[in-house]
Image (cartoon, rainbow, N blue to C red; front, side, top):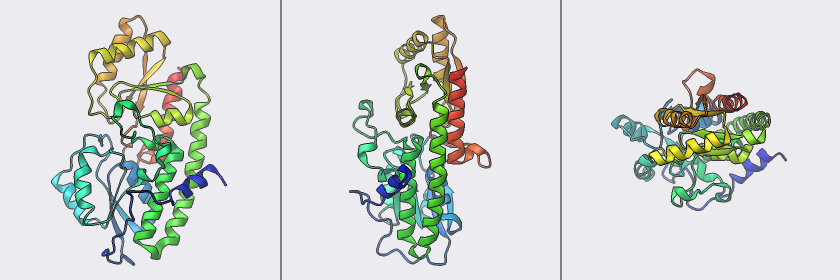
Length: 310
């Protein structure tokens, strides 16, 4: 049994506080296309792969949108009210939507798919005030557990299509296993002393742990926090002393703070390059390779490796 098969089985174990997606009053959806609302692009992508033609997925947060700061509009509330089921990441990623999702959850099925990951495998940095780091999708093996939870939720909601959901999930989990292997192989190309990923905020800790990179972020795990002058100077000193060849901007976070770090490094007599833009809390534009989860992850590791190898 591969590690991805084991990870998928873990998602079948009931977790406290994560009840079944289907309420007892939920009407039958047999023969109807299931209207799904998903918060982030990564969640929407997982539901589309598992649900196939049985689901019509509408995402709330498109390319370049920061889920940490996202507030629901009136249109979003109408979309949530019309949905048969709502999928979101959870672990406080969608912080400002938490109250809305909780209220909606009393009226229709909701699923926080990242909470299917065993807590023993979640990171809990001290600076995040006792909460878990929500950026689990950058460890591909962990994200496979969330994908398996999508499968289980759809089976509970629409048991008549269970075989379809299980077959789609099995195929997609195989693709994710191949992706995990690719990321590990690319990471191994970078000499260990150069494996340092520096970005605007700490979105890549799971990536670092899974694939052997030291990770530094200027703003901490949530972009709601602010970086001060001392943070900029401290990170600049680290980069100059270690002679880190590249730092990275993020598609959903302003490049202003990274630009400030680069100028501070130059003032110390070392020139650090911007190695490219990474997708952190949002995927790329629809219709592009980076507009899918697999394409986003491949883009990120390719960009990181190219930047650090110079």
